[in-house]
Length: 531
Image 1 (cartoon, rainbow, N blue to C red):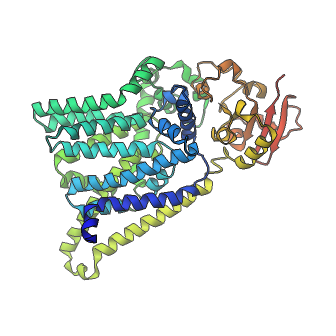
Image 2: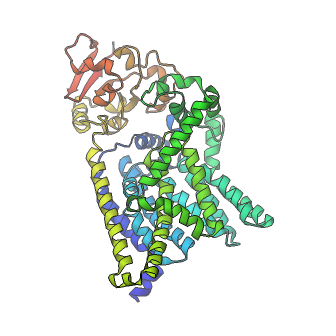
């Protein structure tokens, strides 16, 4: 009875155990250091309080993750809500990986093995406890791939609708998942006869559009187009600016208004930057495989050789277009989490096939249980790598390159100093400082040529500068955007070293209306008195 129960639900056991493990580990990550996550939390909290989705976040991310954070923040803290979304998405993705592996191999044991390797993948586990939207996108992205592959072998309309809907949800988490639909549409026509292809594409596109329609409508009303965004600013950073300089974000980007403008300005630099970023993407995919990293390249060749063309063409086509889209701008490890997950499945299929072939050639290895030992060694290695990655991450999350230094002490001091913080605006590099203070937020310019008194009111900065829309509450008029507190930490000093005199409160360069509230070796906090 127990055996039959296990077999019936075998793909569900590990996701449930993994979710429990994540809930136990997640409290170790106790600082909201995810810059992106904080600003999306601000937007989400405004959404559930009746304010429309607006401001800086609308130009860079769709609204699904902020909305989920906002809804969750009615029950728990926004930070916990953001992490819970990632944990739930990760647990579901572990099951989806089982389904994908079984779809590709026809073997439930390989589905379980793919799950086992995924839950000991360092990048995957760290992302599972982070307050970021990458895990949310990944669960829908991989689900859409699995459903599409299943749909191509079936006449069930519900599968095509499900594939389109999950692709739509992925694109509501991050714009990068728009890469799925062109591949799905193209491959439907390639793999199916014309009549079936037309029906499949109609169902795919309809489901995708229905899921996205509310956001497209809201985006068109607010920003002039259903697909309006400012991702071109991120792309232009590496093309028309040195990545070490933030002048692009705080000044020169205002001369450009689209990706085409940036390409026209310097086509050669654009192409060279894309090639560099593609190389970085390749490095990410080769190094985020955990214990399976050495097998990623062989797995790609194995995929083409061992899997049917109708499967590998969809998987590798979607992965290639997705990576190309991401590579138009800066690439970080977590940006390719969905593709890393797919590569985990492909690597497991390769390793299992290789070990089986090795056992057939060297039959004497069977008495040593060679395959079981090899897999156990790889899984143990993955577990060790993951433990180190999680430990390293939680050890640095309350410093974050100096941008969160002393935040607990500062929060305690300022709350005791000013009981009216909720009505005040705090200027800092990291928005989490304002989150913990329960105050409004003004992003500290990371490039500025004026005086420190001008800094706290954005004096001299072009009003059309995109970063100015990051303020919270988003309804704060720009002319009233003057900081009540300035947090000048070692993180901000690395960008604006000309204001290092703030670390010496007795300096004559400190304006008379700057009153010191907190000081340590790494950060000073000034209250900005109104003149």
